[in-house]
Image (cartoon, rainbow, N blue to C red; front, side):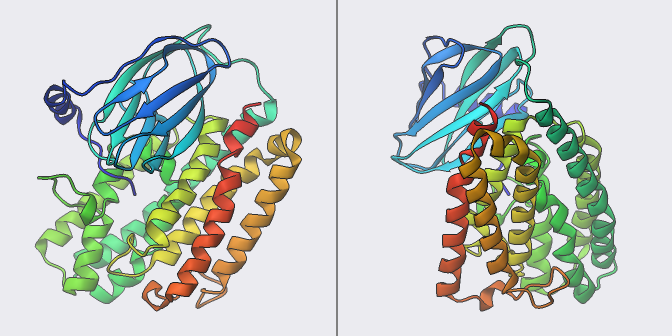
Length: 378
């Protein structure tokens, strides 16, 4: 789940309202140079407006009072790469692969709205330099993986929607968590489109003023808190299926690069840290550990496909990632109520000390995983 992104029309309105907010930039970066991005509550300063095609690195510093998100975007708002939850006073390095063309760098204070944007021109032949062919193989296999996950999700969603439309609360509850697994495994790819995620996976606290609440979590609230299904919920279930069919049709065409795979793996761990470990993601059903496992599996899949190159470029990093993925999966298995399925204990039964242990394991994996993109870009 990510905070909602405004539509193009709303974005234009926001841009007009925030015309006094500063977004400044300077010169052209040379090949291999790092673009300095300084984010604050009302400004977004970048050290360059032009880079050559290939790998671009953003050295991000948040000098504002709010957590921010920094993204590299296509002109149509699709996400090339991003880093969420950059806390006040913290720094992060984001490495991405870009072809020749026009882009934007966006800082989103509070991780909401259109953001403060700077245009970025990528020059060159139109394609990045030749790379290890194993990376092309990894991209192709990962593209098939995300498509397979979407294809496998639709029947599970249909089962969930059928139960909701029949007014069968118990059956809908049983079908809810399984219907989300494929999405959770590949969420960064889904989020890259910008428009589908807010329709299907937004939580109530992340709604913008005036935004209608739709998707899984709206139905989750009805099933577990209200314990009833009305006409509105039945209509929303039908819309959920329609939106996810669109995701299924589009996901195989997403822009995927080795660095976006690596950054996406880290984003999945960030999702765990900011939503699942805290219990905020599944506030009504408490099925957070199912989502947690899906996020970890998706991150591990991306890493394993990139591992041949990562292990060549940085053997110690690959060894550490293997160790930390094993440790986290072993810890998660302690909470399975059925060792042969995705049945996990209800997260409201997980104690504070146990949540701390899970959080520590996530952080131990997140740190080396944050270095994977730069490693495969060598």
